[in-house]
Image 1 (spheres, rainbow, N blue to C red):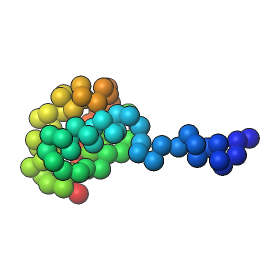
Image 2 (image 1 turned 90 degrees about the vertical axis):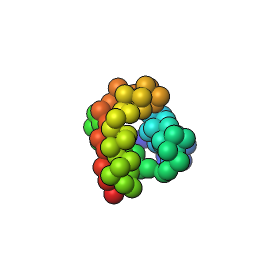
Image 3 (image 1 turned 180 degrees about the horizontal axis):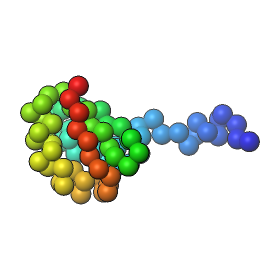
Length: 78
């Protein structure tokens, strides 16, 4: 049985590498902060506007290549 200290040392508050890569890509290209979560085999990207969501949908292949993920991208407005 592991102690809570051992578990917290391995905990990454920033999230998995592909989540952080998606956040960095969108922040650098569009100068906006988004929320990215993992839901099964998909990354759920929550954006502040519909126009940004549509633009990101068109660039979904570039986002996947930049982040190195093979997960499906889901865009939500919120």
